[in-house]
Length: 198
Image (cartoon, rainbow, N blue to C red; front, top):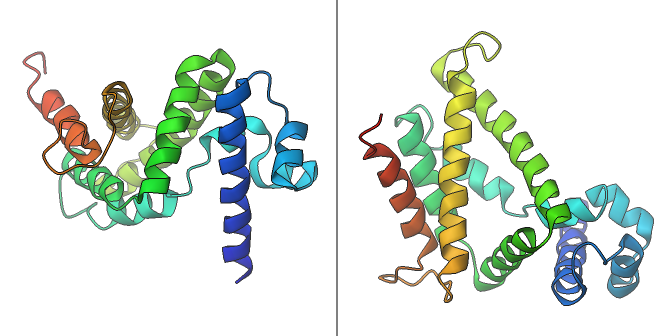
């Protein structure tokens, strides 16, 4: 119950923060502005997110991504497990979650300060993925660069899909539409597999 309440509070704060970032800009919106609009204390924001950058990059669906990926690791090759895991997770998002992800993607493209927060999160996500990949492959991360390389490649494929989704002008999860996020994830990984340079 406590975890559910904490998560609900975090989603509320993030929704308010995103709305303010889109309205006033990321750089000009303060933690104080977000706290006032969300009717929470500034200390709650710092406790949950560490600052306004954390509001932008916090992914409420992390457990969904982890579940989908971990169910495939060890059963499929790493890149295929990642492709299917991310596509499945994106296909399970509801409309509010898609709207939030789209807004966060737009905000990150508009502000160097926001882009910096996203880059820091990308590094943290790459480290976490590399650890999971190293374990799956039975490798030591310190002596073998392969897990870290695979993690970065996976995240770049996902980032490319998100960029294309955001740029499509009509982001949906529609079943035959070019703007389907799971389809764009699959296309990114397919383009990687089809590179003649590899």
